[in-house]
Length: 151
Image (tube, rainbow, N blue to C red):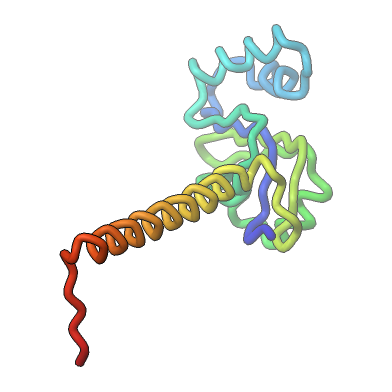
C-alpha cells in the first residue's frame, strides 16, 4: 500500500522573465513527439527545475520547492487539477498530471518494482548465507575440526 500520494506528471519551474512561457504551456499539453523535443530543449535552456517523466514520483517531492507544497487537501487537488499553474515573485510553476494514486491505495507495480527486487535479493542472500553456514558446520563436524562446549 502507498504511504504517500504519487503521480506521473510533468513539472516545470521557469523564471517569470523566461521567453515564450505561453508557448511552454502549449508544448506541455501537446502529445506530439516534435513538441516534446521542443519542450525538453526549452526546459534545458530556461527552466530552473523540471521533470518530464512517465515514471511514478512522490507528489510532495516533485512540488516541494513550489507554492504547491502548501496545498492543504492534496487528494482533492489531484482529483480536480490535471493541469495547474501558479507563480510567485520569481518563478512560474506548471504541473500537468497524467496519472495519480492516493496514499493508502495499492502501489503500482512499476513504482514497487525496485522494492520488490530488493526484498527478493535479500531473501536469496539470506538463504545462501544460511546454506553456507550449514555446509561449513557439516564439513567441520565431519573433519573433527569443531568442538562443542556445554555451559
